[in-house]
Image (cartoon, rainbow, N blue to C red; front, side):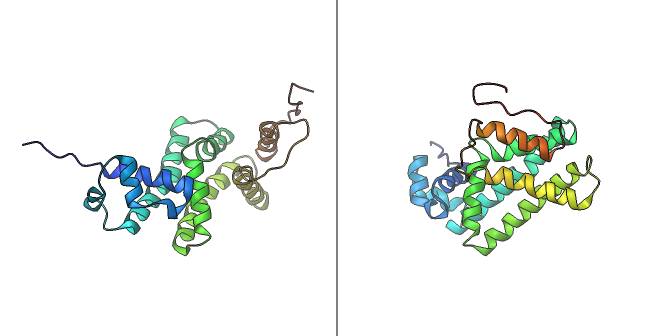
Length: 196
């Protein structure tokens, strides 16, 4: 007798997160996910009662990866507060994994109050880290809050901004913005071809 291997639950969630990142929650369809996984949709129901249960599991995974796992890694890799802030930003808002999912969840939250509440919880945890870290080098509570907000807005907003920066690259301007927010010595912005 040959044992039947089922597609692991995590594979369904991962495919769902990929679909969400590309097409939003409406793109998360059991039939489509099964086809991408090369299986029948019957195996889906061994793990999930319905599509809503999958969506909830996807949000659980996104929340865990973008808060608990990021914060654990930031702490385990050490460094001063400024290094930790920058590492958390890189882990969360750059790359092919968390950023597209995060942006899709933000869009989804505009239409779904339960998702908006979860996003609020995630963003509050991220803001707590910023406040704590910025508070190590800035003692004014109002300034800590303002810098935390600005840092978060830069991390998210930079992905939506279409503006040019003259002879500077986006990376150069973002690096200078980080210097300002993290109270680091000023570095001159060079032209796209070199230092000025």
